[in-house]
Amino acid sequence: MRTAGQGPGGFGKRDGFMEPGQDLVMAGYTGFSGTRLIGERRMEDLRKHFAPGFLRCLNEKEHYSTEQWMNRELEAGSSPVTAYEFAGEGGVLAALWNLSGIFNRGVDVDLRLLPMRQVTVEVCELFELNPYRLYSGNCILLAAEGGVSLVRRLRREGIPAEVVGCVTKGIARQIRHGGEEAGFLERPQPDELFKLDIAPQILPL
Image (cartoon, rainbow, N blue to C red; front, side, top):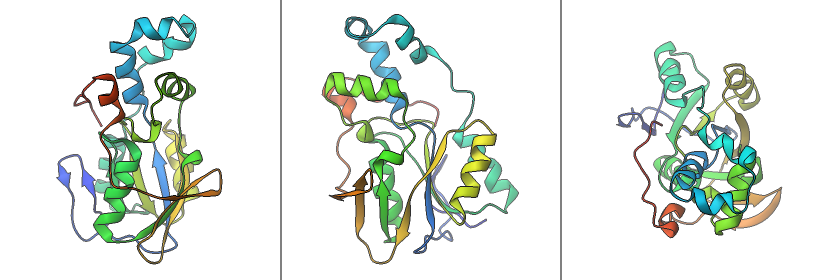
């Protein structure tokens, strides 16, 4: 498989590619690692607004690893994935900017399609944070042929995944909300955790 983008040890091989018409797939939960960090540092605030049962998921371990899955794909050499970028500090929007920038390709992405847990939605609303700029460990953006089939494969391994958009002609980075045009992707911004005086930690991808 030809790959490119930021892998576990930094930028990967440069013989990867992104071509117009390819699907963009997101695997892993948007902003969930950042949500857990907020739970660790601001639990007293959260308990004032949410029931204990609702917050219990912040202590749950994710029983999958997007890094391990990607490594298996690299070893197999027959993956439909042609380029990838792990999300981390700056959230999925930073990963999207980086991946499209590596290949100087346009993208069209619907943010409403990104996998996200309800607890992340609620916590971000409470603190007025943008979940798409929130620290997103164990989350990866993939450019691939046959995104629907790839999503099924990921889900069979217990990894949440969705086709979130596509690669387009030109260099425009189009962002949508629920199918409606919302503008263009901006340069990466500081991670939302900094608004709460929480520095993103180095967590497993």
